[in-house]
Image 1 (spheres, protein in one colour):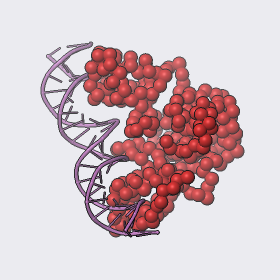
Image 2: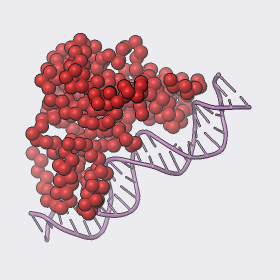
Image 3: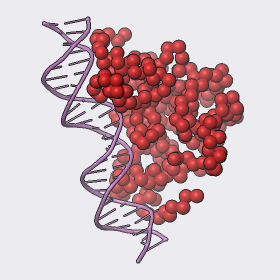
Image 4: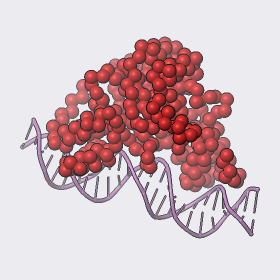
Length: 150
Length: 150
DNA sequence: TTGCGTGCAAAGGTTTTGCATGGCA
DNA sequence: TGCCATGCAAAACCTTTGCACGCAA
């Protein structure tokens, strides 16, 4: 299918290693560079972006757009082959930023429901359910009422 | 709660009018400016961004991040008050951009399910289910196979 | 040796910010 | 008159691109 030849290089290995080390969470291109720099692995920013692009189109890595923190940016996450992220939902807590992978039969049924009753195919890669996780909800309750933004 | 005083101005009126005219679809800050310029209404870009921010935090307008076209950007859409958006889900077609308000008992149950079983409160104002609507799916089928990313 | 990969810096795009001025109340 | 709102331009930001050199195969 994709006939592009690809060379194996130190940079690619190190970038991929970093993604795998962080497979539990999202990481920005900048964070990857910082992380590599910390361990005295110098990789140019352009290289990181270029390789990430390739990994994303290969399906090895998933790309999200996230607004947490100050400036919005893309975040990348290694796709664990054992987890079928395309079949479950993602919940993201607006307070603590935690991403929860939700594997649940009930939600699978919801998919079918939306498809059959509402004629819409949900893309689990692009969709994230935003809200508040239980832990944060408890904390907020103690503090009084809550607000949408920080 | 929010005690900030707000003045009524020509610019605000015109921006809001433009959003309401386009309430069926989403629109970028740039498109708002272009649309206003066309009708000889001069409004600075900074003003548009600033007012949009305010409208978003008020809940009058919803803000999305969309990657369609060349450069990714934020898109805005007026929230129709007559619809109780905080209680239903929103589906957004990634192809045609249409926003579908989904009032459905089944999905309400899903909320309870997520809350009770997964200890997570879904925020319907911030959450959008992305995917493909039936109409667009049909079109794509005609054109051949589809791909996840472009 | 071939041509993909890399690094640097510059370009590109949207969105934000600073500051003086304008205009609502 | 007081203070919010506006406009302009510059800044800030992330991401992409051009180009010469490096380095797998």
